[in-house]
Image (cartoon, rainbow, N blue to C red; front, side, top):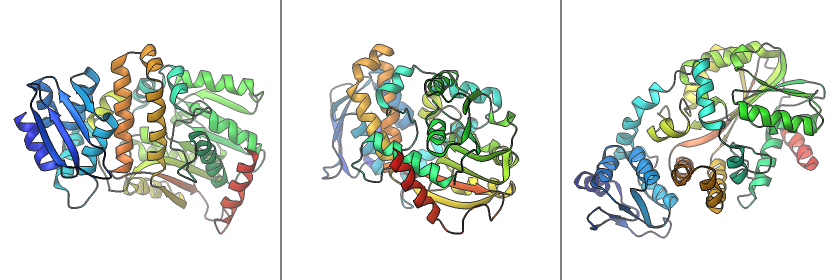
Length: 407
C-alpha cells in the first residue's frame, strides 16, 4: 500500500476518494466536491495495491474484473471519473504525462495491423454474441458515436440523427455506388439505400456482423441493392461514387495510414466524395492504454489529426470539411453504460461476472476519455477534385433536414 499511497497522495486533489486496504485500514485522498461523485474501493490483497501503483489502468481493471478491487461506495464509473478528473488533459499536469509513458510501449506494439492480424483483432471484439449488443445498443445496433442535437435525446434519436448527419455530408444522388468500409451490422448501408436510393456495398472482417447484415438486407427486400462482403478494404477494386467509413479507422493502425488513404483515392471516382468518422485526440499523438489493448481493442488506436492529415496530403486528397464532435461520444457511452447495468443479469448469463465487470470498466474508461482526457470524434470529408461539392456547406443542412423528415 506504500507505493499506491504515494501515487494517490500526489494525484488526487479533487473529489473524495477512499481506499480500504487488505488489512482493513482506510486511506483518504482529495477533498469532497459538489461536481465529482465520491468513491470508496476495497482492495482484498496487498498485490492489488502494488498492481495499481505500477500500472493504474491495468491494475484497476484486472483487480475489478477479478473481484480483488471491490466498490464499497459508488460504482466503477464513479471511481474512474474521479481518478481521471485528477489526471485530466492539462498542459500543467505532470502526473498525466507519467501515466501516458506507461502505456506508450504497449500501444506502439499493437499498431502493426497486417490483413491477417486485422481480422483476428476484429473477431476479438465484434464476434461476441449478438445478444450482448442487443442489450445495450439502439434498435438499429449502431456501435459508434451518436449525434446529440439535444443532450436530453434518447439514444435511438441520437443514432438516427447521426445517420442523417452523415448521409447529408455525402451529397448523395439516386443510383450512385456507395462503399461502406467497416459496415458493422449493416445499419448505415441500409439507411443510405432507403433515404437516398443508392446502391451500397458494405465490407467487414466480422463473420457475425456479416451474417446479421445480410439477413437484414434480405428481410428488407433490398439484397440486390445493398450487398455485404467479408473482405479487407485493401483487396477492393472501384470505382465508387461515395465512400463512407464509421468507427473503423481506429483499427487501421498508424503504419497503415498511407495505405488506407491511398486506397480511398484509388477506389473513389474522380468526382467522388468520402467521409471518415473516427475517434481522435485533441492533445496530439498518444498511446492506447494497456487495458484496452489487452482486453478490448487489440490493434486499436485513436489518432491525432496531426497524424491523419499528412497521410491524406500524401494521397493527393482534398480535405473539404472537418467537424469536431467534442462530447457526443461521452453521452453515447453513458447511455450504453446505463443499459448494461440495467441488463446485468442477462450479460452475466451470456458470459460471467468477470466479463460483465470487464465490459463495465471498458465503458467507464471510454466515457472518462471523452469527459476528462483529450478524446473526441472527428468527421473528415474528402474528395479528389476541389469542385466535387457545392461552394458552401448549406447543402448539408438542407439534406439533413430532409433525411430526418423521412425518419
